[in-house]
Image (cartoon, rainbow, N blue to C red; front, side, top):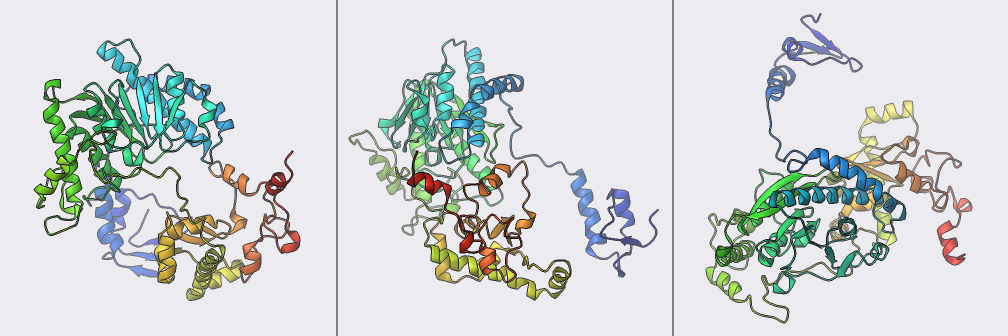
Length: 520
């Protein structure tokens, strides 16, 4: 039984039920120090945990597979997974084959069940046609086509894997723009699977293609009609807010928009579906004017060009709240939807992604610049232990190799000069990407930077393939050990166990380079 004072030890685990917490609302002792009940633990923790334990917080997302039969989905998914598992072995792209293959299998499964149930609901016998806008690797198009659904995929860049699918999979290299030349009047469904800048346009394109055209979008990156999406509701997560925006686009286009959550290995797994209209066909002209006004209002709300326009966070979705819109500019834009060689342009200023993707992942930075940043950050982490004598003393007693302290990315950035930060800002991911690229030296976990201790590297199910790549025979001893050269205590591993070379005499030529020089 617990007495008036409760002694807590670090090695003791206590089951914190409400009765225990009530008893803890008295004086308690830890490491010889008596803490009165007026401390945070006694005065606030009890009430907070009691509130959290009884609070029923509703999820901001739908339950998984809420719009289709789960039993059908499970059966079809297993069938397709078995059918297309060989794609994992022959995947030619640099992306993770297991993630991308099984994710597209799962999306295809969902669409097959959705379309099967739609045919039963509408009394249709013919399988639905589709176009996948921004189809990427084209695997989703390949699976749907193989399952008997007529369709094609369009993307701005051709992928190496396209050549593996065969002539029955129709893929086109083309940049889609929001104008009359990219309408699909004879297509039943438009698909946007991580379609980036096309995502908000897909409901618009579907609505203007034909009254019977439906859409399925799986939003990932956040884009508005004309560029990056700017947050407007700080009370919501950015992801939830963006889903609400795309839903609003669908509603303004006259769709009944439904939301579902897929079973895919991704943090962005909420899809939005528009398969029915909220208006009869004879009102098409009125609804189309509504769509145009909505698109123009959004562009006006995000421009800051004069005292007649305001910042985007002063506009609430499609309704203008305390926001002065330059109506003349809106009318001018509507009038500028003029005929071009391809047809009427819906919005000036839209930029599709580049056909040749720019590499901005810090890989193109000069090696000497990267080396300076790595040395600077490593010195910060190693010297941080000297500012904490108790931690340093314990480390010396238990282990003579200095592992350094961890620092947040913000703390690290504060120690770098402005010119370095500016240079890193021009790269996607910036400082964090550079540190992750130098995985031999650093480990970045939950926004904190650590010196990597290779003695603690143990393959797990999640990292087995990654560790295998790092320690592969082809790469063994082909690079110098950073710790052997720069760390004050040298490398924590022996020369025999370290995968990197302890000195130039241990360096081996990469097997990959040998194969390039002497092809068989």
